[in-house]
Length: 168
Image 1 (spheres, rainbow, N blue to C red):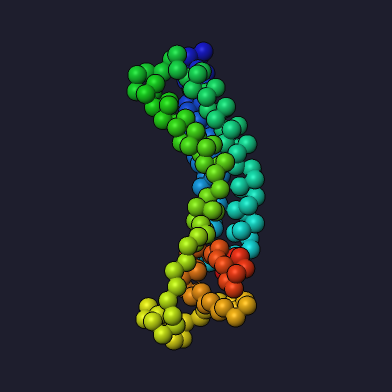
Image 2 (cartoon, rainbow, N blue to C red):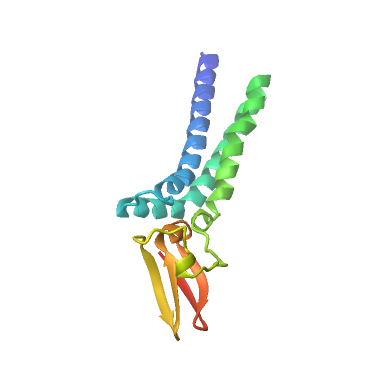
């Protein structure tokens, strides 16, 4: 009877270990998929993304502590293949914990720090109907194609001797 209850405990421990791994990765990964360049972003998706970002670090730390404790408890009775697989459950949780402290939004929307310019008459890569964002300061006029800004979303530049940040 004791052996049967020990088996149930081991089976439940492995299940909890799987759930901890999947949930810690999911809490960190969902914001990445909810907010992506060139993808429709809804207010609800953005709200969920930022809420998950707020809780992702402590959720992944709690999952790491719980999974480590389960691995230590399972190790003594585990067979060689189970012992080999235990660290494989901890690895994605460690990666999720590290990634939860990164600002992946900056990775996706990195500012374009050096813009290259051509005269409007030489801009053969653009169609006449394309939308641009334009600014004129102190007699200097610059136009940024929306199609090119859509990837970076932000551009640091100097126009008419004034530093500006153009964003889309």
